[in-house]
Length: 353
Image 1 (spheres, rainbow, N blue to C red):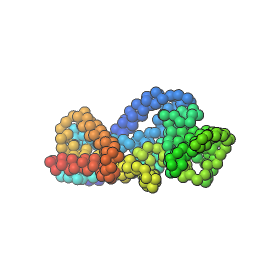
Image 2: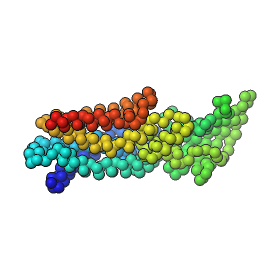
Image 3: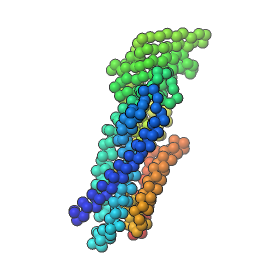
Image 4: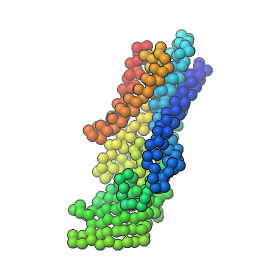
């Protein structure tokens, strides 16, 4: 029985790895072609290629559930086409045993995904985004194609480039009084973190009062009394789906303290927490398809079914993520719905076998 488990598991694992590699390769290729439209400044084709290479861990993490589904369909479908699954079932091996054999190697894929999402993806993605922004930065105060906003009470800060080493470029600050009147603005070419404060360089500052304005220039200016730190900015510069689980929870709770909307971050948090279960449910769906409606169809039809189900699951998550923000639905429920629907479909199909 151990030999049979190993054979089924290795077949499924090789198919999952192959499919994931193909999907990630196609996605990276199309992403690189898209990046070629944004070339400019010091951002050339070589820098675009490096950017895509740095985003590969994130793409692997994103496509793991879909790759697992399609890979299981192909791996188990191969065994079904050669009648090996029929022989296994005729030998008295239960479907639950086959589920266990197919799921066991996927657990290693799940663990790899957790490690990527928690430790690798946030680091590589931040470095990729910062290098891309740095090469595109032209020294302007605010542009429409780049930058990040950060609010602290009546202080609004826009930053063009954030680097992981505690350096920022293109810092625009807007300070409002208690009556929401703009009283001061400044723009700095660069800011360097010094442990407990920032040092702004090449500063143009303007103070605004009711009857006049005054402008000054500084070579350097100390920036105190701010919660902006390199650790905080490493979270701000990334999309919710690119953050680690701990980073998502930390920033979501911070947004709540600032009375800002945190639903998108909580939704991404629960989606990442549930991704191991999602990946295993994809295996369950694949097995239910193989023993159910796809037991006697061609490999092309199985592949098409896997792509359709994977896309439906992906877009259902995206749709519910937006619904969460618009209608204030609990993020946990929104993340659970696609998972539970797939699980119930798999149970229903297996009960019919």
